[in-house]
Length: 433
Image 1 (cartoon, helix red, strand yellow):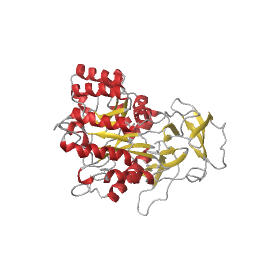
Image 2: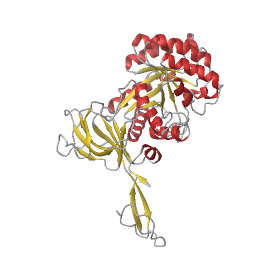
Image 3: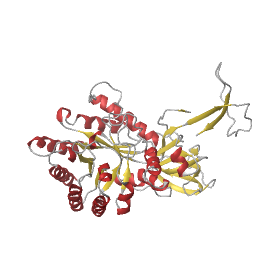
Image 4: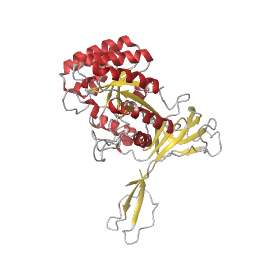
């Protein structure tokens, strides 16, 4: 199997960003409920959904044929690491030069956009000798991605308590003023986790921004205090990856989940592997959060990708559909529940509006070759990504088989052929995946 690289492309009518409302017809798309429909997009909204063949494009030529594709609400990425992405193969310490961080953050965001994530929340470590440098670099990457996808950085200091944490508290406020979309923290790595939590919540309340904390979640007493304070805060609170919850006795974890649900705290799990920021007081991070237990308690559970080819996960793909696949294959969720964790629930965790393939909803969509959601999660090769009503990325995959004269009864799924290379076996049928 070979796959073309993911590259942003213009919409069907060739309109450029800022040239006025675009229009696009997605024809003959299959929905998760089995219907085949036409979907007309105008501007950044779904303008109409009708039976296949019933709609016409507003602009001549602004049409994409989605025959053979499943059309879904686009995923979102609630837990990326833009500052360390794509560094696994680099010798020595991770370079934090501003231009290098900007380049890596941009490339990582484009990779995840090609997978379908039209919105990303990226955790960025600040403080020490780096100051706000990595955050400023990610903010530059955000500007360069305008019109392709939404990149929101979270400022993540390490120490926030005691004399050593005074600079971190000041820097966290500076980060929000510089453009950080949320405030984060690593309470597990602070000598005073409660004080760390209080400092983050204070900054969030001052500036009216959401909170996103790294924690293993293996301290039920601290989780209870978090839930109590989050319930009083009045702003969105997200924690993750919370793999430590799965190591607690079921009864203890259940009580913690009940408290988190009552406080409206969202948990982001990382089915593809943990991240370096989540280490808990010297324990080795691993596994994933107890998704079914949390969901049964009423906790909103979103799924993220975590590390993208850095030291924490040198083979991380940053693919939300792989996260959904793992939740369905190993986490005990149905394909619909698993995909919801990377789409509906992930978007809600980021404070984004809901997406449905219905008139009036945002035109944030992903088309995957396949007929059913389970099959799409199993073999999600070819993808078409729509952001704000425009096609912003395409991935096309082709699988080829050689002809076998010894087995003439083999099924032939397609007869399109490429000319064989000199000296190579005769090329066989081409199957687009």
